[in-house]
Image 1: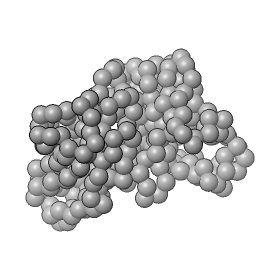
Image 2: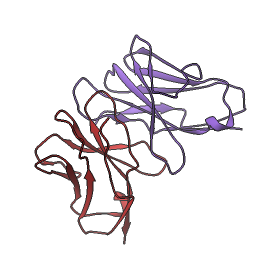
Image 3: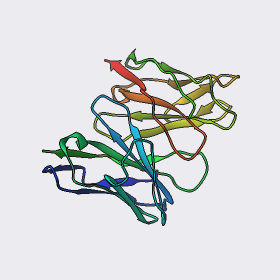
Image 4: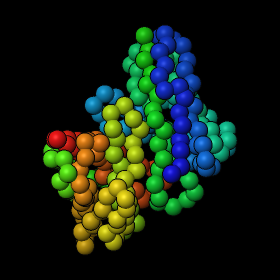
Amino acid sequence: GAVVSQHPSRVICKSGTSVKIECRSLDFQATTMFWYRQFPKKSLMLMATSNEGSKATYEQGVEKDKFLINHASLTLSTLTVTSAHPEDSSFYICSARAGLGAGELFFGEGSRLTVL
Amino acid sequence: DAKTTQPNSMESNEEEPVHLPCNHSTISGTDYIHWYRQLPSQGPEYVIHGLTSNVNNRMASLAIAEDRKSSTLILHRATLRDAAVYYCILRGGNKLVFGAGTILRVKS
């Protein structure tokens, strides 16, 4: 099946710094990618829809200036957590779909962010 | 997005079939029923999806009620590796919105 890869898988940073997480579709082109965050023992929460070549669409309550999303190519979307604080510590997961339609989404392995 | 309701948790014995139910009484005609599962500290994994007819693949079967207001994911022989959180999701548009899911525990 199609593969989506995230990097880094784990990152620890100091409060106030910015962290970039990459999401790549390795063997297919993805015009649309999705970013989720997940707190311990909770479900995934959709943060935003990333569209190649245009601005991301953010879900209600998600600060677009805090979570910068760039989808510069058909195989790469990045999420930058700006001026990170301890409450931003979470498991961030991206997903992508190949083509159109209601078929399956492919998920990355997730990136665990810890802000000290 | 239409809502789904799943039991919080279920338990199964190894090598036995597992039936995971999902209610989606507000499903619309264009909503597909998707199932994903998530192992600890991993991203979700696609299991199966369907619209109206029952579906089978190498991982599982999906039984969809005639009125489409409920569905059941069937794992034919549970193994310890099937222990995960199983999410039933309705997908009508572009995105997947996750509910709480069912924690499946498999006993050896």
